[in-house]
Length: 156
Image (cartoon, rainbow, N blue to C red; front, side):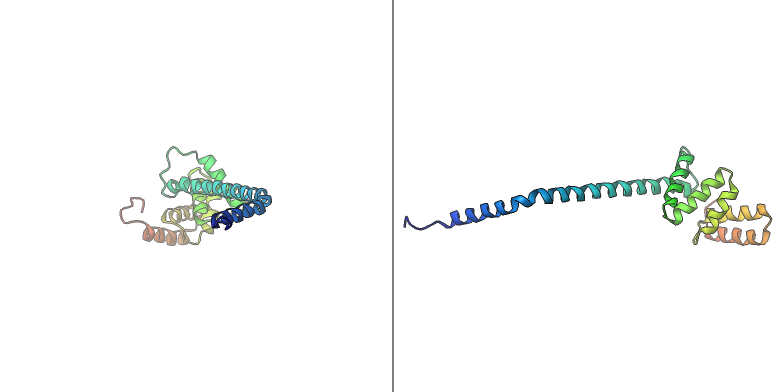
């Protein structure tokens, strides 16, 4: 009985051999893993910035944004669009911000690029067309804006 090896010793030897074989690769997987973690953190930061931007434009789309730095928000929206993101909400927010700053000539192209404009954008587009003298087209947009607006909305 004393000459028999115990199975526990064999398992421990196999475990140590596995660790010794895996040890040279530990540095490689750690650096690759840290690069992956770094990339995930950078992507999370970009997504957080995007989410913050969309949270900031929600009051603009509702046209109740007292206390928001509109110049900085407009710069962030334009920067995002410059890099190729063509989100309808960003285009509509840019148009509303231009309109409220009095830049009708910059707001009108934004509203015309929208495929599904909101009722506020339709109303601003109609007002801009009316100011340019295009009464028939403005009347159509005023009608669309009134139909798209909520029933309790006083602006409709």
